[in-house]
Image 1 (cartoon, one colour):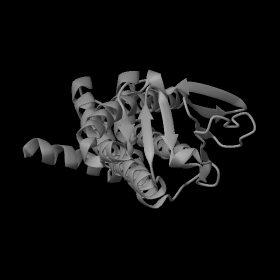
Image 2 (cartoon, rainbow, N blue to C red):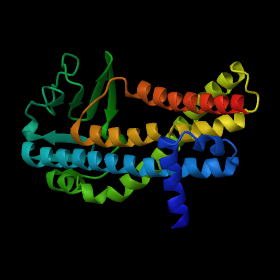
Image 3 (cartoon, helix red, strand yellow):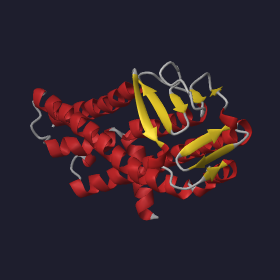
Image 4 (cartoon, helix red, strand yellow):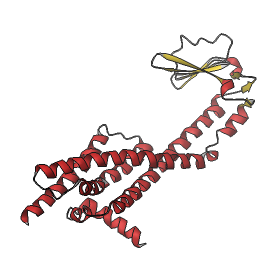
Length: 260
């Protein structure tokens, strides 16, 4: 409990108390990295919640699509038959299903085309062809497909992949931001004549300076996932806010040094 409170206090001070950055700058790198990884772990959990929710929703939507829009489906020996091989279009012609012998692939404007022996994906003027045999080696009918599209079966896997992948990606991307912000702070201190701030000190401060940006990133990710709300220049504001925190901390340290 003590460690938890200590972390919460560091978060609070990083956001509201610029005087704490003087002490932060002298921390061991091990303490800084512990703070960093706890912060990223929390961020990864938030991202995992959002990805799990959205992925489950998409799988359930696909299940409803098959259940309600497909009257009959059969796949065997590498050949697919859907709705008695009649032409069908869905989602504004985004998906075309035509399992007849004379399916017109070239002239279709769809992005995804399900044909008799192959399925096609169109992207940037190119048509990518994939054989069902490369992906399915068992017979499939409508009931087995509906059963396979049960979101509950994949929840554990989605959580595991999202948490691990999110932690790795967020660690790398956030660390790169911190390295750049620390460099900016280090250069500022040198320009202002304060030679007491080394890059290690700047790195410690930058790790805490990015705290509010990370928290806002968590909130924005959840809002975007559940409502679709989008902020065009959020990533720019994310970095700018952390840089402002860093610059303010350096200026206050310089002012304190000058007073001495």
